[in-house]
Length: 395
Image (cartoon, rainbow, N blue to C red; front, top):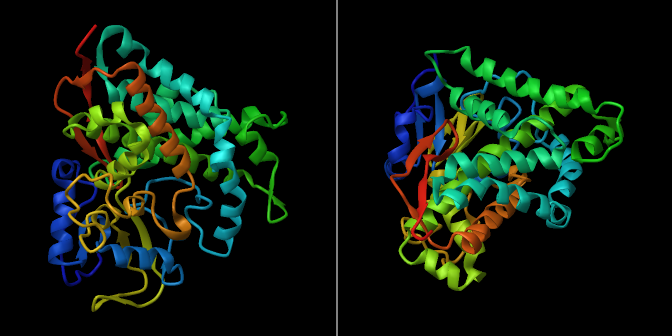
């Protein structure tokens, strides 16, 4: 058992009851102990100040991802290229993968993503009511990343097993659950890779399978890990990003009307929504050597949580952080996609999907309103909604 450290602040990021007051809890931790030890899930240090989080994210020599980038571990059987490697190998992987996710590269996928969004909203438009989370948010990201990769699996199944994997981490009552969930995701990816062997490279998965990194072919294990990163990141972050943003647009006084009158502020609205309700609110590191942060000693082998959700509410970085303000200076400087070399390479895709969903809403459902309470939901590193019931006020 890990020896308790001081200052102590008990915080269990796997506790689902945390969701309704997650960000208030993070702000309280930041105010009481900016660097604090939690004895939950094996024990870890929480870094909650923006400056400390970004410094740690940039210091790979002190904080490594090679012993896992989540707290707790998720039950997977393979290393995840890019996510769980430090420089210089990380630099090689990032250089190889970034070109697939630039605005220019993603431009050709916009019509396909728009068609997916059209299908996702079809029932809601026809009936006049529905649930944004289940009908739209779960469908669009999973279908979009599957289309880009060239996966043929049913989007609903992929979404379900990915959601189960996120929910299973840290389930101490059923410790086998995470490994079973991870195996289901891995099985889907392996099936797609097997189906693609020996065929022309007509999509991103095919191109990656035919490519070399640092002059060497990508191994089967590396390919499996890469596809898992794409599926999980493409699902989790954007599912919650879509539902959180639509909820914010519907509840923030005057915001929906303002966007209908002028869409030029939409990019800022999306970023401010991502700041105030971050879909990904923490990532993990392991201390590689002795580090001192604000007078607190972190020792080699200690787990360290980069608590992005707390950093997004740091008043030293964001004035009046509780206020939703798309016009705030530095609105794009939030930590929701991480920071530094491990900043999410899928950020552009996530924001594109969120923007296209909101634009569809503005075009086709300008009379939408909430039809019931939104239910917050948190997993070990993600925050979103389990339901967002809506209805049209006309027709």
